Image (cartoon, rainbow, N blue to C red):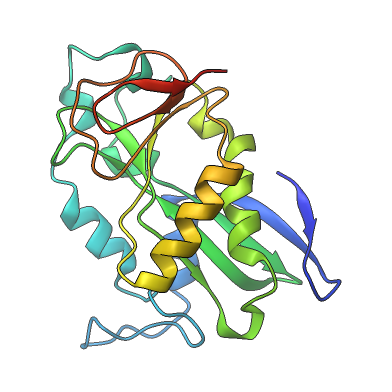
Length: 203
């Protein structure tokens, strides 16, 4: 994954974290009875994040038999959480920001990666961290020949920002990109799709 330059001149490494690495990082923070507690500087990331992700995805990928081409993982028989991935931006071992992509099958009938959230430490805000994390998805090996669904951004400012950056940066060259409101069959080829399943750009 690339090393990127922030707006303040600092070089930041972008790494792929699997679910165990995410849990290992968050294990360094004391467990909280209040599940709303967050890691200092972050708006969404907290010690309860892995539990929340697991609870939101009750399907078992290893039980699947009939899969479409972009649902197939190389290792088919692992626990579903083994496929959850994140992009972590770090500066000298300090976590600047994170983009979490769980492997899910929930309100749609097929498996895909979904952007759960993007969170940037307040100390690194407005320096391009989130933009670099989104752009790095184009280089993420775990997305090759998979489906990526854009997540729902709750705030109006966040929604406006993410929509612009998603349109500008995400290319769908070796993965299929679908919107959060997608309502169709699983894509079978890379490209960018509208909510009705029409491919609007192709690699």
